[in-house]
Image 1: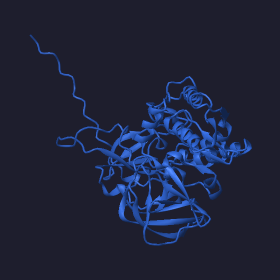
Image 2: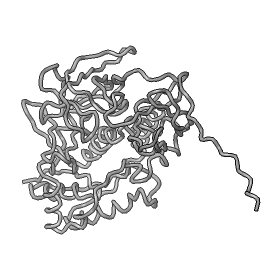
Image 3: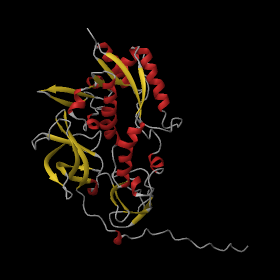
Image 4: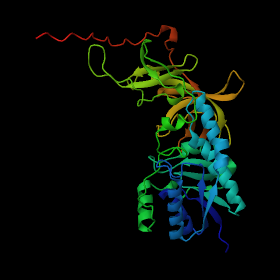
Length: 394
């Protein structure tokens, strides 16, 4: 009997390595592919793709499978990175991992695998696929702490039908245990947490290479200037770190933490508030555009729908209705039973019906209270300099 061929995206990490082994145990002919998606910085401490390839090749050697090094950097630059810069330049906060999955890992990579005669591709994502009534459903991974269906909501039915997620049925602890038992060299390798082309480098340092920036005022809810920002592109809603406006209140006492609540591009003003639960950080509705339905159809406005407006967020019950923007673009509006924290334009709103991921869209706008106009900004009082006193005469 001829084995079915599956091409596994070997990243150098433990999840894809165990995925390849599991497929071998299931009787597949397994071929590994290492995807290089970013040119340059190979010798940089923050982005060591060469190290990842060495780890992937070591895994292939232990498993006794072929591995191919494929360069998708040109496709990545055109389809993902260019859009990433456009979105940041427009003051939004994109999620490049969502676009990378749709355009590179499950399009360019899938096309390459089909040319190799594969029937399927496989990755180390924590999610599952189920066929039902001729349609393919994207399901959450069984490990709730690792579920990655949010990042895959832009896949289509054709892509999903060709994809296997072997570790989606497992918890991360079990994946680590398997890797150690079969002697994989990366069994204890730390999980990657950075964006694929930035790695673990300081984010603002990276963006500073590509985006122009114009400093401007940071103002609080009363319209008082409390600091200066370095350029609106470098901030995102809900951001707490890196604002440079710590200190003490008038009358003493430690500040409650500051959070970014709004970016006014027209006035180049960053609005901040104090306290995680501030009303300016809560949105009761959002509108999303650039829709993509992995379920293969537009979901019906029915009970039981929930949404995530950011990764690792708990599912939030919501109602759905079709919405058309002023520009005529088809969109959706989601109304939440409980206001959602720091809903951010450019991020993805992803819909679920229980464990089934339905798809979603890019957040275009969300409800916010009116903010203080720039004309009302009161400059931050500067500390008065004390005049030097003459030395006392002896």
